[in-house]
Figure 1 (cartoon, helix red, strand yellow):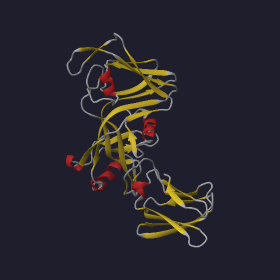
Figure 2 (figure 1 turned 60 degrees about the vertical axis):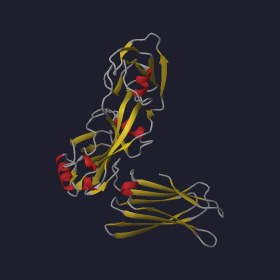
Figure 3 (figure 1 turned 90 degrees about the vertical axis):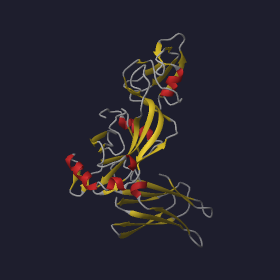
Amino acid sequence: MGNNWNKEYTDLIRSSLSSSWGNWSLSSDVAPGAVGIADPQNGNFHQVSQSLPGLTPEALRAGDASFDWNFMSSGVSRTETKIEGGGSGTDPQTGTKLGADLKMEWKFGHERELSSQCAVEKWVRIKETSTVTSQLDWLVGEARQAGMAGQHGIAQGFGVITRVLYARSGVNVASVSADNTFSIEGSASAVHSLVGEGRGAASFSRTSSTKSVDKHMWPSEAGIESTGLVPIAYDFASFDGRLLLPQWVTTVGAYTLLVDSKVGCTYTVKSKLTYSVDGRMVTRYGNVAPGRSVTYGDIPVAALDLNLRLEFVCVGRNEVKEFHWSNPRGQWINGHRTVVVSGVWPGRINAVEAG
């Protein structure tokens, strides 16, 4: 997976799948239980070992994935044109020659824009996190050999693929240049199935582009039917020392919680944050003036049972809202959380999580 498109691809799909990584090149190195390094700088996965020791099919669970996979950069558009008396293709089911009656074309307005359209089939995941943590000592040894371990254990970025999304077929294409086009020709049903808009056999007769593109397709060759499944995205668990980070997407040195008073809010809010670290309770206080904010930074990665109490100062009895996160390592995947408070006295108060 040494391409340089996976970062853009991962950023694009995280608009819908916030904890997932993209597999732009459809690399077979991506599989449930594969061990290696995920690099947030370029989005690539470098496999160190094909699988956790002793990983069995019984430790995995498959589930249907019934949603559209259609991601495009903002400057990309797609059109279709009927071909009258076009070139020939081969029906992958019968082997007979067919006319290519459809041309599907992508237009790229700018360089480094991309499109991914696939026929998603299923997720396959490791059932229990204990399957990963039970191999911690072995993982520390593998990380050390890969230069991803220190005195306290594994460095963030080294870990295990815990869930993979598979597709029956698909097209990943990125433009190296501005004002570019990429097209696929074939029978209408086969090409529509190729991009996930049908359940029939997926195939194509030919591809072309006006300028250079980087493309990865399944099936990978013209005139053949796709067989088997290809991985298009995955979830990854890493570690901070010996601490499991179950949905790891980027390096987190500490967690940050922002309490933000929405513009127009007239309430003063007293805030109290509590959490435990290695069995020790920590309590921190803040005061949120109308239209201002308070930031709780440097919350340790090992923190558990975070509780935020917000007391809206009123005339008479104050009103209270509370938020609880039992384990931010599985909930604050980007390392931060924002809670927005609002309300105009003496009206209704409100507090909501905003990511």
